[in-house]
Image 1 (spheres, rainbow, N blue to C red):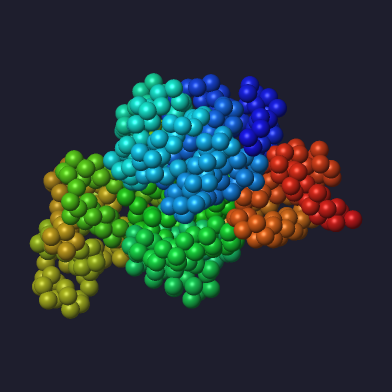
Image 2 (spheres, rainbow, N blue to C red; image 1 turned 180 degrees about the vertical axis):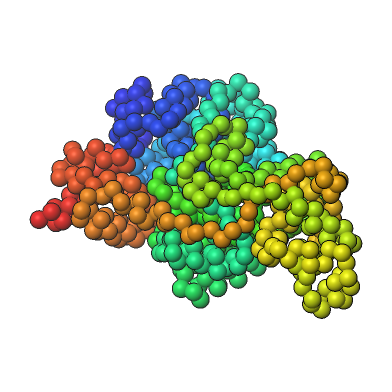
Length: 607
């Protein structure tokens, strides 16, 4: 859309309604749009699904020239451009997916003033050729998406982002907006410093995603637990399962496929063509479960991901928040589920301690892991703990596992003393499995080989079952009372803090490990629960039409219309173009393009 829209130069609400099809801004969107459109710099911290893209797309339309968007992922650029094209916006991208002729065509369109938005990969933008190209074009603004990638302490560090401060040096009169869905105070400071945004206005939205239900379960049989979660709570729905290693991704995806789950693997070690095909299928098809390393996900623009599951512990709360935030971008109910055990803690500690990073980085990584363990082990509201990490105060949410089924706590002082004594008496070199056998008095070959059946601690823990003891050892490590010795192949050792417990000077309270009741599924019933009688069938017809249209155009279905838009159509059954235009998500171009087909479908349904 290169011709001005009515009121575009002065009225952001007119642009919001006509182009994007929405009657009102959400949260701080309007304030951000007006600030940037007026030429101001901004740092925007807004959760995934909060509408960050609009904060730079609409100002790009309101200002003269082309908005330049720095984006780290090819897939995200392609989806954003496809979605903008559906809205009638003239958008393009420059990245390695284009051949030389296609790239030159985009460059000519930019210089001719034919583009409203141009997406550019950071490594391309900082080349002399691209900077010279931009110097010859009229630039409306620079948008730096996924700005946390500039943080060398962060979980998604991209070295090429460090060069983006040159935008301020080369184009001092062009406003810049940096955006991210997650940044703790330290990362925010680093973004401001490295991108020279000291004079920028900071907009910090709530990090809360109230539509996501957080659940963390004790890891017992993770594959079986995951399969039960998929079958009973999300059958046929799209979601992501994160694993730490490539091998585990491949094995988990293959196993899920044998169980009838439409699962695909994704990791950086795969053939590029296969990886691209799997990502495309996830974007364009319904009901795909993507099993992936964290190489998959940043910038994924699929709004109807109904769950994100973790089979391995992430490295930090930032990573966990960023990954779980890929669920429920459409605002409908979604699920963040994780299976967590002592082996996860051992693995993450080993990765930190045996890594080649500087000591300062290792200390910070350990602190971030400790904060995540606190989230896993809390007996209080998980959302309160999560938001507190980002400096946001909140109240118990009523929509996480600890709120819905509050865990019991117990005085574990005596159990802790027994466990710590077992660590000490066996030489501080054995893992939890062996220590539990000793405490429970198991007369097996391994215990006998080391004469541990003759120790004073043998059998003193027979009053607790193995699951309870696993919880005790895991929480001892999380509380810093025991530590993992990686030189002893993961054996447990006493920490200096354990002395107070052993001598009776410190009380220890722990979460009691008990089997959780299976939670009530949230997604399917909540997604259609408010539709009037008969509207659910209409919604399915609308989705079938959308899918056919998406296949014809070779774009993801959500690019045509979001689920929330289809639900509103099914609920209100508009019978003319004016009524259809009032539905959220239907702007002028989509009304022109799809209005007649939708009304025909609605008319057929109501005859």
